[in-house]
Every structure is written in C-alpha cells, then in structure tokens.
Amino acid sequence: MKSCLLMVFVGVLFIGCQDKSVKKPVFLNPKPITVVNQDSLVFEVGTEEWKARVNTPVQLIYPEISFNKNQLTVKINSKNGVIEGPSFLTLQSGEFQFIYPISINNIQTTSQLADLRSPKTVNTDSSMIQQQILYSFDSFGNLSTLENEEFFIENNLELAPKTGIFKAQANSSVSSFYIDPGTVTSIPLDIIGGSQNKVVIQAGPLIDQFNNPVSNGTLIQFFIQKDGFQKNFETVVQDSYGRISLTYSEIEKATIVAKIAQVYSKKLTFQKP
Image 1 (cartoon, rainbow, N blue to C red):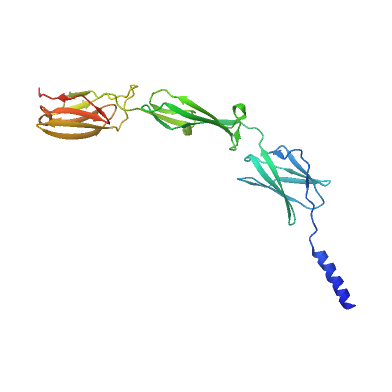
Image 2 (image 1 turned 120 degrees about the vertical axis):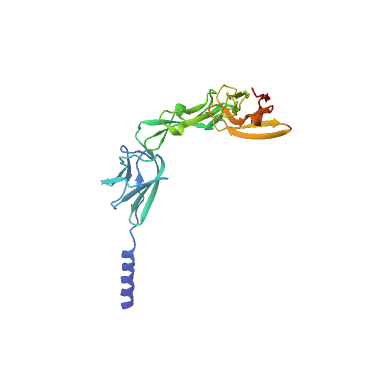
C-alpha cells in the first residue's frame, strides 16, 4: 500500500514539473510586411507572457509589444530608421520560440542619387567610353527604385577629350573621374639662349592629338651625338616643356634628338653663333 501511494505521489510530482505547452501564435496580418513607425503585426495568442525581437541581416531590433484580449500587437518604432528587407520576427514565451519571416520597409524619405563611373581614369589614347552606374539611397542606406522600378541603371557615356578632374555630382568626391592626356604627337625642338657659356635645349610645346598638354612628369630623353660618341640625358616634362642645359662645347657641331615614348623629334644640329 505504501509503495502504491509513493508511485502516485511521484507521478503527480512529475506531471507538475512538466512545462505547459504553448500554442503557436496565429499571424493575423494579410501580408507579412511592416512599415517602421506605422504598421503593426498582430497575432492571436493565449494568455502567456510574450517577448519579441526582430533579426535582420545587420540589426537586432526589439519592437514594442502590447496585449489586448488574446491579441498580441508588435510594432517597430525607430527614430533613426532601419535597414529594409527580409527579416525574422521571433516570439518567445518561456522556453518556446516561434519564428515568422517578415519584410521591413521604411516610410519613404528623401533619397540621394549616386553616380559612379568606371574606369575612374580615362586616357585620350584609349577609348573615351565610360561606364556609368546610377542608384539611389535614403539617409538610412536603403536602396530606392529608379526608372522602371529598377534599383540600378547602367549607361555607357562618350566623354569629351578635355583633360581634367570632373565630378558627376558636385558635392561627391566618390563620383570624381579623371581624363588624362595621351601621348605626344610631335616634339618641336629648339635651342634657346642661356648664360655663362651655356645654352638651353628645349622640347615643346608638347601636346596630344586633342591639343591637351602632356602630363607633368612625363619622361623625355635627349640624345647628343658628337664626334662618333653619344651622350644621353633625361628629364621630365613640366608645363608642356622639357629642357636641359648644356655648355657650348658639349653641343657645338653635335646632332640633337629628343624622344618621348615611341615619338622622336627631328634632328637638330647646333652651330655656335
């Protein structure tokens, strides 16, 4: 008899220690979409206490919840906005968790148009076609649709061959692109007056096929041939000219040639005046 009473007592104790099962809340919204600071997600629940959280790819959000007559209301409020897109709402009561896929949208805010160019640098010797990608985003970093409900628009633009630094957007350094001059087309060569028994050999003005001055820092070589020997001098272009200074004795009756890349000047022979 005592053993039977003990078994009954243990059985009652076991049943009392078991967790009460929690029924899955019924999602009452016609569509699983919520707009921040505006829409609510509503569930039919029992009398349990509930907690809620929203997981996005980049954020963990704790929404506001309220309970009224077996209905649980979940609302995402934010002063700073959230990243839009697919998310998961988790409802938790004790050790029981229920997960619902939802989509989060922000109330429409002012968007900024981004204009990106590739390649960033174009050389007038090569193709003057540049790829343009346009997209729009709001202050929270969410993409906004453009024409035809597309998020990105790609164009091929033909650029004018004028060198310089340009910005697709006036206040955006990210949208900057560069047009560099090409190779020099010809190398005018002259000898100009110097001082103290010296003369200056000058190459220039040095321009590309579109009359853009070649880049400062471009390497220019001078070859001086005299009495069967050749001396080589190197300098860089500055403000469309390349110059070296030599003595009369170094270049008298010498043949002088200048070279940039594959382009040579005509030969120049110096005779002391």
